[in-house]
Each structure stands twice: as C-alpha cells, then as structure tokens.
Length: 206
Image (cartoon, rainbow, N blue to C red):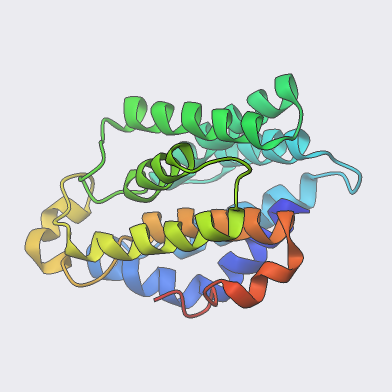
C-alpha cells in the first residue's frame, strides 16, 4: 500500500522533519505529516486501489490535519485521486494528478517555486518528469526530488511563519519540501520494491 510506505518514510524521518521545521517554523510539521498518515492508513481498506488510497488520504488530511501543510497535502491527494479515478493507476494519470494538485497548492497557498515551500520540490521534480522520456523511472524521479528538497537550504523563506525567520532559515532544507520528497520515495518503492537500495534513507534524507 502506497500510503503505508509514505507513513513508513514519515515515521523514519520524523525527527529530522521536526528539527527542520523548528529551525524555520513552529516545529509541528513532523507531527502533522506522521499523524495524518497514521489516520489515513487506518481508514484505507486493505483491498483499496491507488485512487481510493489518495481519496481517503485527501479526506482525512482536509478534515483532520491541522497546520498549513494538512489542507495543502489534502488538496494534492484529492487531485491525484481524482485523476487516478478517471484514468486508471498508470503513470500518466498519476502525473496529471500531481500536476493538478501542484497547481491547486500554488493557487490556494498563494506560493510559487522559489518561495521555499513544498512547491520547491513538487514543481522542479515534475518538470524533470515531463522532460524525461517515458517510461517514468520513479527511482530516478525520487532521487531528483530529494535533490530539489535539499536545494531549498539555499532559499530564504517568503511564505508563512518561516518568512519571519528570514535569512536565518538558510542552511536547512524546508521541512515541507522534504516531506514531498518522501512521497516520491514511497511512489518509487511502491512501483519497484528493490529501489530502496538506490534511494536515500528516509531517516537520514540529507
């Protein structure tokens, strides 16, 4: 189950996600992601297809998870689930859903690439996907996602609580961007369980 893999990654990365968010925010990102995924996984039927996984996670994050990240992740999951529901669980439907969800996050959150948010992982990673020739190599995509998330360490925050920290946030990656990299980790392992050995350890994503 994809969301179980995402939860596994969030559990392992919890300490690092908390540390990163404490450096630039209120330190609750690790809690919100981990507890949100725990709640979502508890509601996903054992025989659920990928669309149902995302739709169930969307409902839980939108209704139950606080902070800025909860509703925004809920929007992302909702668009991915809707795309998968219409187009099957193939790569094209998944990518279309991620594109739509990224646009929704930007629209609702009023952020863009360069503002040091989760969009700084989502946007560039999806650009990489669109630039590559099919079929999608999800292991390579996940590794690129971690690279983009790490690169946020060079960005000054312009949105949310982190914007009050300003230049002092530089040097640590954005927790939200790293959380999105963990989603791509889960996608890669779900598509190819042997890819674990070719991906960063979620507990030490840096």
